[in-house]
Image 1 (spheres, rainbow, N blue to C red):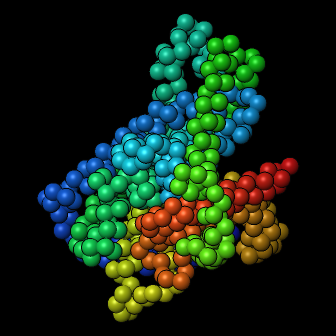
Image 2: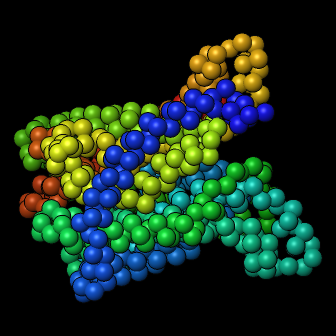
Image 3: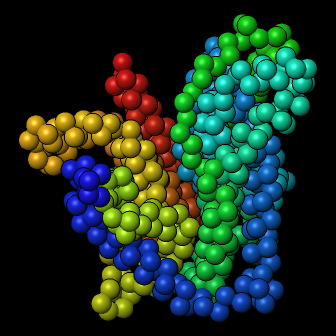
Length: 524
């Protein structure tokens, strides 16, 4: 049997099609990263210059602390929603995922709305916001492994006299160690490459690498310092992910969760209290965000909403919403096309070289943050033969680059679940590869591709890092409108920033709800 036959009717096709994502990632990720590296080749500046070194050290410190606290908070939450069946479990689980689908800028504003005035900027609110944002990562990554752990292991240890702590240490923890490490690496990456939340919460006295890259590149015009920080960030994030990524994915075979009515009274009480605390903790910032949008000065007024939708104030919601939706549609379309080809090559490529190219296309954008992508675009596409300065399509392309790893991973997971026997049977009956693709793969992948498209749109709607560097006048998205309004004085103007954030949050949640309903109905 040849290698092509082992990979079904698509082996040779996948080997050729991988050229498309290879060229895309090379042009819009590798080349901009190289342009940044060339400018920041003096990476020692991030170590020898006091200001840059302090920025890097603080960013590493806050990302490490944020990741540790996220695990401390996220593991009990994961235990509650992954191992127990109770009334409202699906709602509680969904609430833990809400912050992850919201733009980090919106989450930062939500914490500004609920925190006391003297705690609205600094290290503490930034770390708390990171925990709030990334608990969903622990629930998804560790929960997938925890759900597949049979309760019989724990019950056998209990029969032998092991207490709850001993059972967790000797039975549960060894099975979860890889997934915990994978979750910690992902959370570290998200916290290290933070921009929206840091822009709102960290304050000028505690800058992180992302905000400093923007400041040096746009405000100070110091491309050398910006590039040095960008290269340092890529190296650190890449190293951490390389050390921890193995446990970040797990094929889950869920076991039946424990019904609380059969559990011990103390356990029922603990789970109930935990569910209530989770609900309050994840709902309160959203309520604060909405209330802040109608608070003007010391009182409440709908003036900010009226001016925003009437076009009489500093914010034109309709125009910004149109720009956001247009950019998101273009970015989602591009990312699903490229991401599906990456997934197709990873599953069906008949050669190791083609599979390696597809894997590289998925991995490379992971270690390059959105701000670094934007900076790379500025440096790489301003001279011939790639003089694309001011082109409208650069913004959706940058969003597509950021969303690409999430899209390809979503599609490849579903693509691998399609039984190869279906394709083999169709080929035996004389169906061409194109006919097999249309009748089998396209049909079975319709919902996963729809979910991946929605995920790409969500990334684009909330993307703030690359947008800060690449956005053009007259085409201001909602995230850029929020950033602009926060820098302007006036109670109504500040309230309008929260109006834009509420509209953006509602749009993201509506998109997630529609996809969830479509998936649920499709499974019935």
